[in-house]
View 1 (spheres, rainbow, N blue to C red):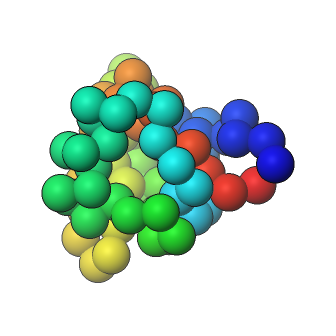
View 2 (cartoon, one colour; view 1 turned 120 degrees about the vertical axis):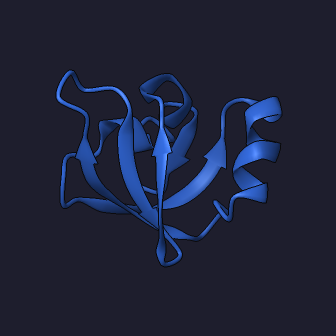
Length: 76
């Protein structure tokens, strides 16, 4: 199974399920915020210059830097 698609690759309106994390330190932060493997995330919008982005996770919105979002792998 390939883990090349990340949250940072999503376009507004697209969604995906979290597979795993590429950065162990950031993974703890994401887990605390409810970004658990198997949870569906939906890209809402990005800032005018593309960073940060807003995603919907488990009923709430979360703003992430693109560099952070690129460490969250999605199920393909």
